[in-house]
Length: 349
Image (tube, rainbow, N blue to C red; front, top):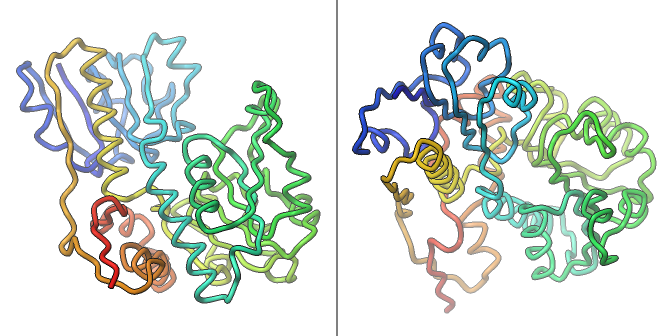
């Protein structure tokens, strides 16, 4: 059995080799997968940088693809279906990590921009694994929350969802957590376009941690320059890693697609990918992926919000990217250990 793995997937090296099977494992950069390299592989474990389409897979022996990510728009699912290739993603794997990122962003908006969160309305567009956890975070901070998810609203009988028009009319902060879709009844490509940004009733703050193309970056820059929105926090960009530098310089926080990069989220994705591999190939082994502990587990504080920012402050990631935007991929590939709140003990005094 031959498995080719993106070498930036954390905590995976040496795990499959420890299974009681005859296996050849190759690790390499995700962008370096070629038809020649993967033609005799049985399985691929990838991230978003590997485009799994006909051009890569045609004529290969690949039977299984796991992407250690929530999003799967880099996988041509229709071609995989036609070719009999099973694929799987990791829904919800880093939902806690993205919720941590949004929580810290909201706390920074309060601390650095003087916003009173308990007087503001947060609009969440896309209420899946991530959006649901972001809603819980906002509720704890005393914010009014509006939920927008047209597919769920159509399928579910409750009336807890609002329209995108309601979001534009009522929200002080709008955060996007949708997949990237270009067709169907509810496409999300450029969901936040010039028309949407012009329709905002308030000078809202826009946050995007979903997919870069969900927000029209050029339109967002115009809205910032013209003062039609108050500010923006962008973790995902159009044309990554060749991002729009003027937009980076204009936003409050700009980070290199790392909102979901907590060690906890990474470990979850690796675990889910390996579990799927074992199920598909009927391998009896069971891997247990545990991220490293933080250097200092105990945090003594008089202010819980400051403790949460001590655990994770996205301004640090933003400053690194704004200083060296050409290192977008390097900053992602060499991201430091970041744990979520559950890894710490916060001691009030």
